[in-house]
Image (cartoon, rainbow, N blue to C red):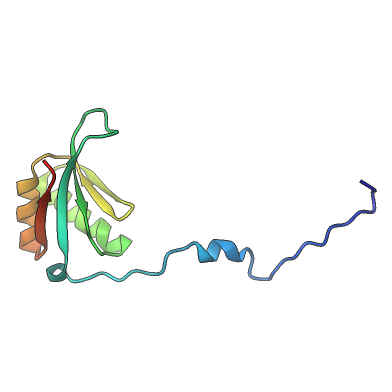
Length: 112
């Protein structure tokens, strides 16, 4: 390649536009009465320790973390909120279902 070889590089003042298009649209939270939460027990990839996963929630990330915190405090267990799911470190789905019912959510026990 000759030393005076130059490649034309295109640039915009806004930066890389590809990264902007990959972000999901802002999601709004539905009221608890309009949501059906499924509670599923999972142990895969956790060294045999079972957790209860809450699926089907239509909440913003902030509302999801607030709900996870409320559940963890009322049950006295650990857990996390990530990727639109809530993982609670207990197998007692009935207790989780009671707390969610008090908050106004419709609950469905999924799996075994």
